[in-house]
Image (cartoon, rainbow, N blue to C red; front, side):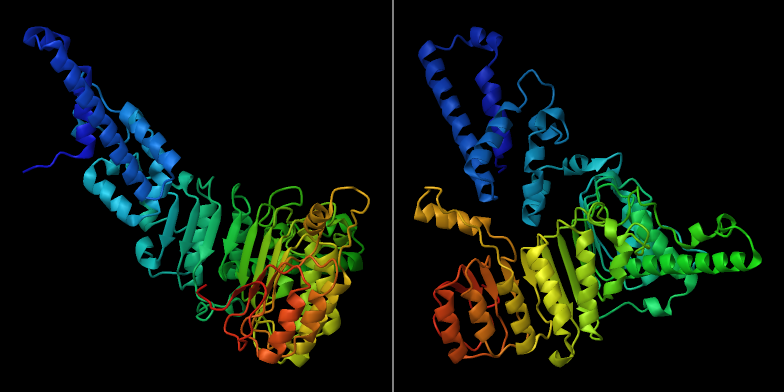
Length: 539
């Protein structure tokens, strides 16, 4: 026995509710019967509408939105005058445009997609546009692209093959891929940059930091490096690009910097040779130098101009100059970086697996780069293993002072930075030294409101993470927490070596601080803390 679906029930009730005038006149149904049947129809319509509303709420929609969509669905049902039946109604028709409202929520739930596909075979027409799928997110791997075995530079072409020939790229918003061969990734990125990806915002390389690709930058040939620099410039031409994540982008920035440095050295050599021959300097600039450094002019777009989030792995800090318009810092350019920043929209910068050699030099380069990203809100540094005694504490203090005083950074993550007790003492002292003391005295706004305004007006780092920093002595941390005017509200001390004795000192200092959230995951502390505390990684 076939069970009538909710959709068909809605259609039948609306169809019967309108009725047929000729049939009513022919049957001469009594008025009382008509009134009773009409009431039943109205109750049935309301019941099925409420059933649809309950179903939408179970799928995650709020009550107000579910009620609005259910009402739109009832209004969109075809009338008796329509020639098509409910089973023939296409989900791509103008009448059912309200279903587009449900698209983001349903596509986030594979079970809902399966249920919708089983209920109507029109899902294919709903997702297709000119025989191509209109999708917003793609996850790619070598099998989905059907890559060929020849990977020479002469045969390399933009790799928009395989499943990419079945989708419309103009609606693509984000892409993530896992491809072990470096040249395949470069070809893929070139294909996206040279296509109609007007809406592409996010590109993520899922290659693991523990399993790097077979071809490292040091082993690349010169033409391969120039190709990588060209791809970096092409990505800068994407109008909506905001998020880059993964190790491949460290390679692109390094190649861009390498090309700029090589072009400058070639130009200097040519100028010196021309001067020795007595030629004017205007004729000494080689025409081929522009091809050696495929970098866009300073007035145009480049790879760092529109980025908001940059997540890099295996990066040398000097490679950050690949984000600049010329691929490197030209002479006299640093003094103009404040008025004309190279990365004006960058809000989040994560530098993971930084080299263990000379960590002080690395933080010096990061400090100089901060002037090129004036709106940076979050900074994370992560180093390879080295002895904490190798830290240059003066360079570390200068970086923290720069962050606390002149930048807009409110979240500083120093996990796995091997700071040790000395390094943590340096960080805490710099944060405590440079605090904002904002006075609202004499404004007649009350003590409670005055305290609230003072907390809101504090500038500087509000979230600090010192997890996995080999910290054993919390004296410097406690002294920092007791500093008046400190903006810090969140502190992460997870996975360090201190125990209950230090935890007791921490609990006393927290009562005098503005900390609202504390993380002590994987710690050896059993003391109760006076603020909200997360003890496990799952919480």
